[in-house]
Length: 251
Image (cartoon, rainbow, N blue to C red; front, side):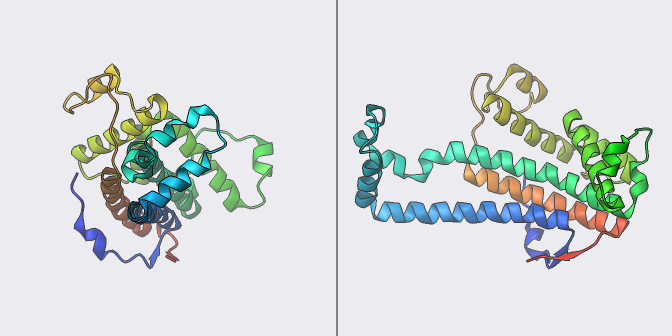
């Protein structure tokens, strides 16, 4: 996936709350990555002191931690943790992407509640739990999108197209790319990223090997965040105009 350089030209002073929440997550990822790189640099410059401090932390621990004293420097480099941390960050990135749709749907419902029109019925006690119509609509929209999440992202796409008249992605190639990203996230969550036969069958054109594990790197997650950012940015602009969504300041 190629990074869209237009990202640098986007004015984030005002946007939907859903888009801002999405963007804040990405900003925090980039700052965390910078924080770790700076910390890694400081540790490298003061490696002797860092090793002493690490060993001291486990002075009173059991023999199970004696391996620290053999090669403490191994545990003081960012590379040692990259696979584990980047996998968690990748999962968070995809969750952030999917959550945007839940958040923006709640904003759309406030402007156009008729999109929730269906044959579904709500219990009276559920309705009476809400003190305003706005809160009730938000809860109903959250229930609906949660149901869609359980069904799969394809159903979310269909719902946005059928009910909102919005096509999430510009072509089938991008749709397939997003499907792969989401399925990788599911594999990372439910199988520690271990590649299954079913996964390979679904994505035969990729270089996956059954039994091996998906490999995540910080730079890869950063690139994915850029891709997702540009998708959401373009989509949010369309939704904002079509449904006259409230714009709030980015701070």
